[in-house]
Amino acid sequence: MTDWRIFNFDTVESTNDTAKEYSRTATDNFVITADKQTAGRGRRGRRWVSLDGNLFCSIGLKFELKHLGKLVLLSSLSLLQAIKNLKPDADVKLKWPNDVLLNGAKVSGMLLEKGADDFMIVGIGVNIKQSPVGAQMLYKTTSLYTAGIHTDKENFLNLLLQKLSENLDLLQKDPDFVRFKWLEYAKGLNEEIVVCQDNVKKMGIFTGIDENAALLLNTEQGLIKILVGDVFYMSDEND
Image (cartoon, rainbow, N blue to C red; front, side):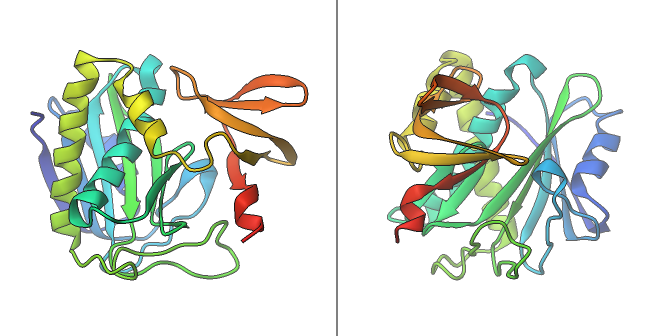
């Protein structure tokens, strides 16, 4: 089981930036948390809205860069399992590449960045008490509280780290474990989806992910692998 050194701050600009700085001198796995972020950011340079009572943390751990895709899957899977631990019948799905959906809406965000030496930084935000709203939001959002899951950020972080530790141990025993486990909870598998890459849209059937966590999309032109993009579900448009 992995041990974690946890450091909590009242306010930081970004837990990821603080974690990257700390990784320069760190020797063991660690976690940076903050009650407030003034410059939180999400994937692809988007702003992460940091609301009171929610979890903002960055996990620093040693992980081979060439297996970054596995860490992406592992982290989102651990988030899902932490929610399931609190409410086993919760409607939780995984959305490629690293989002967790609760009742069809986004409940968390993630940003992976390279730290010093062989450290990877996994920045995670979870809507514990409330969720951001507004026209600037790319997807529908929700919170654990809205879904009737009552917890606090400290308790949820402990659950998340427990699940992450268990999954890291399983990954060492079976390198393919995380891919197949992630697919069990994948939203839209074997259904038609749209992947947006800047101004380009690609449509096809989501058939799975490869060993490096690339999305496999079966298009009219054939099977393609997608490393970066925003996924939208055709089934959502028909609701």
